[in-house]
Amino acid sequence: MSAHGEGRQMSELHDLTLAELATKLRGKEVSAVEVARHFLARGARHESLGAYLATSEEVTLAQARGADARLAGGDTAPLLGVPIAHKDIFVTTDFPSTAGSRMLEGYRSPFDSTVVLKFKGAGAVSLGKLNCDEFAMGSSNENSAFKPVLNPWDTTRVPGGSSGGSAVAVAARLAPAATGTDTGGSIRQPASFCGITGIKPTYGRASRYGMIAFASSLDQAGPMARTAEDCALLLSAMCGPDPDRDSTSLDVPAEDFTRTLNDSLQGLRIGVPKEFFGEGLSADVRAAVDAALKEYGKLGAVLVPISLPRTELSIPVYYIIAPAEASSNLSRFDGVKFGHRAEKYTDLTDMYKKTRAEGFGDEVKRRIMIGTYVLSHGYYDAYYLQAQKIRRMIADDFQQAFKTCDLIAGPVAPTVAWKLGEKSSDPVASYLADIFTLPASLAGLPCMSVPAGFGAGGMPVGLQLIANHLQEARLLNAAHRLQQATDWHQKTPGGLLR
Ligand code: GLN
Image 1 (cartoon, protein in one colour):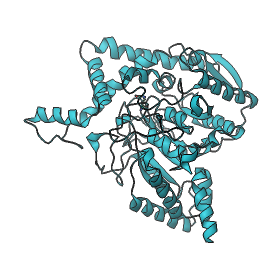
Image 2 (cartoon, rainbow, N blue to C red):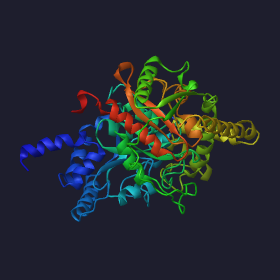
Image 3 (tube, protein in one colour):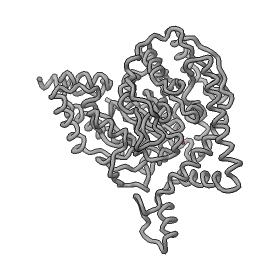
Image 4 (tube, protein in one colour):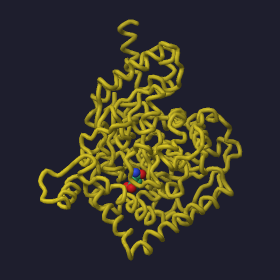
């Protein structure tokens, strides 16, 4: 290949989707090592965005060489040689695993999480670990103990959270794809804020083994990429039962989500919940979501008005249940088993206290306190138990709605990405912004964010799609058809990124 040809090709690699890269790799037009080197260099050039917490040329290139050997042997596995980066909530043997917390600074896991292992087995090449809110608690990535992540569309704004590093890596084309986790919106909201595509599958579809736990009844892994087609490829590799390691993983076989991407949407009934279009929704986001819904009309879908009457209650319910579970999960960080231990202490209790005071950030401490309170004797019935009951009602509301529609559509968030620092002194303001993502999380439903144009300040807006349990294929089909009819997902953040 001529020097000129190579230069041209290299500058284009990051503009390719994951599916396009995979095809080029299989066709031997480019090697996994070349692709890996390109993305490593790009990541280093845009380090100031704060997306990565750990990279290693040695590890990445070794994996790329392994993929090239498999490709040379004629292996045609769909993800062979494509680079991917992982949210730093997934434990990995090759890189440190911090969950964005000082508590786990420099921590090395002796094993790989199931999701990471599945990608390794599929021959994907890991580019490193991505920044996130501490223990996945947050909506702006400003709770990372290490550094904020900047939104590439406007670096004075947040990327969303908690999978902010994942969203920025993909949006800024530092990686063609990333993993994320979603407890109450952490895949959908940053995907929406950064103009990319992300899907949270049905609770239990992907194994939670090796995902550093936040709220176990809600936590779920999912892919983030530029297109629905890429998400379908990635999700097909991530799902499947893991009975020996995650007892809540569903006994449902892995599925090829790419098979139905092109199905017709003729007659598809899309439910539009009136509660998602009320007062709190800003006019710019509303206009973008309406335009996307109109596109679905052109594709043959029928819009059906529906109601999810307990939408508002999902905020107090989630902010009781999630901290309750977090307070229990985070008790394992005691200075003995993992990570940080205070240097000076007088006795065992003092060691626990100092370790936790030093290791956890403010938001994590706040949630441990709320969680401990709502679970304590005398308050359990008043808060935790009531929240569980309403959670069930929220789930029932969805089942009621799915009697008259096949999918539900609405905004992901009430506004576009806000300015860095804008909500950091007011945690409740940021909790309120989760209103549209929490209901599907509480009901364990598959849901996604699909780029749907731009709002205030030229910032991206995401359309949220929600399906009934195990209907990820339907979601991805609807998202793919929209992406074939529109070009919102192809827009790239300007100047900075060339
Ligand atoms: N923003 C929500 C929270 O702070 C959701 C986080 C998540 O999904 N991990 O808890």
